[in-house]
Length: 266
Length: 257
Image: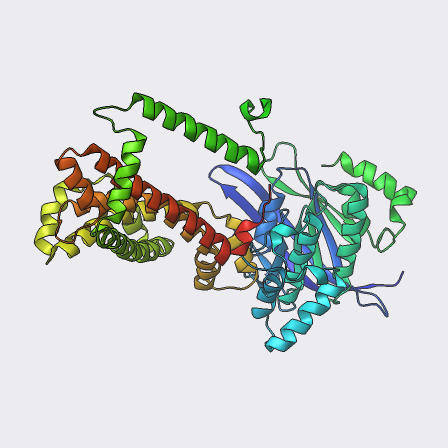
């Protein structure tokens, strides 16, 4: 499988997070590179896997620029500038949307604040195109409370995609879903990654199998014996292992073994 | 039958109406039996209501009270909204917190001060009404603001909105339906206060004035009649404000239970 690792798109340097004496995150360093494949427009899918309550959501907020770490910095883009809130889209676990706005109006907010200005007519066309692509066209006039969890998740994703953010952070996208729904969400995430070469999906989750099945790179975030605060304990290059970009990956013996081994590392 | 005595049961609208009618009938029955010299019976009150409504001054008094309440409510609402929204700007937060605490200030001691600073009875009544209502409005609005999910603010940030635009989207536009709900809940306080402030300056008349005059002559049937009218108008406004909320903000009707 041909591929090239190119420029660094996101870099976290020496991230530490403390609340008083409580060390939450310790010395987190990571890099996300642009992976290109010949004749294919494909973004990156990265997983941050860790136990519940380990500090994944805190790291999630730091990577998105919503929270500042106690020390360290997050650099983003081809020029690697410090991340600002608004440069990374977030899709929270409970798919927050504005309940006082219709789905169309929620999606329009994404376009209203995107870098490239659009006319009202263009906005309408873009929204309808995306709604059609993600099977939401018949729901545009509804309110968020009238949609199912899966539909809300799709709206939340499109809203962030429409802002033009190439980095999208997903907080526990597989949480509480049955096997069939996990497959659907996996397809959805792959669809988003294929929208643009620079689209970078960062999935924060405790679901090892679902994360590894979709990712090209995975990081394990865990506590180390005798040290306070969670840190990255392992990086798994699934591309290098030949386990990335395969639809039948869950049946692969090597993959099954990898998932089994990972459980002991969290 | 067992359902209506079991907690957390959902009953149909027909059962609700039946429960209301039966309980009302029982209450009226007891009132009729127990009523006598001091407590006027429902039939006496009913005839007093009719006499009050057809009296020539009733509509003047009614509109005087209604006008005063609406004027006081509108000004109070405006002040309370500005103070509540601005409470999210750190420099204005102490002012909002102080206004919340003003609920514990009694009006009685301040009437003299207000009398000195106002030019006529109408101004005095409006000022007292505003002073009495605003702290309750601000308290309710601040609790609405405090209940906002912080993820809504975060969503605005990821959508590249400025802090002022976030305030507009999440707090002002996003909670506009709650303004009507707070208004509905606090209308009762304003309506209750109207009878008190009207007693301070009776030149403009009003339902409060009617109530005080009836009490003065110990005409209990009339007192109950005016009380009933005040009660029913309050209930009607409560209903209308609830309906207006659903009509103006259709998403509040969506049942997510």
